[in-house]
Amino acid sequence: MNERKFDLEERLIQFALLILDIAEKLPNTYIGNYFGKQLVRSGTSPAFHYSEAQGAESRKDFVHKLKIALKELRESSTNMKIIKMRPILQSDQLDKAIKECNELISILVKSIQTTKKNMGIK
Image (cartoon, rainbow, N blue to C red; front, side, top):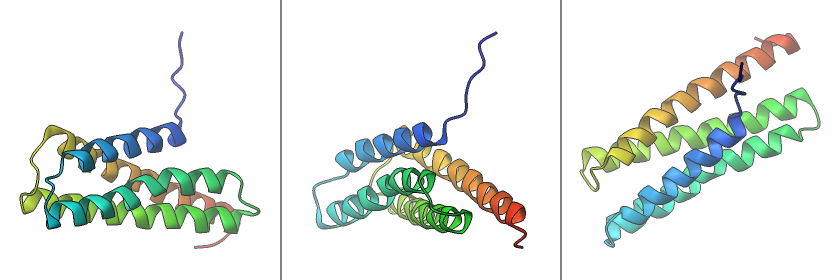
């Protein structure tokens, strides 16, 4: 039986690659460039912050780095919702990225809660 290992870092990297694809499809306008640049920053950084969290010096440091990744995912989610509602871009990739972003947010929220619980923090 082949067990599939859950690898959050790989999932965050794949999300970052999806974000890069979306940013490249945005129109070359003031609005498209503004949202694209912001989305590239907020949509790729969670992978970096999660990687940093893996080398955290303490559980408190681990939680802090996960919280930063979570903030960036929430910012990406809002950015993509605006892109969709405007509409600056309509694509299946955008819908896929919004769905994946929401799932990643849920995973990080749960990870933070679990780690805090294990630390005895509410």
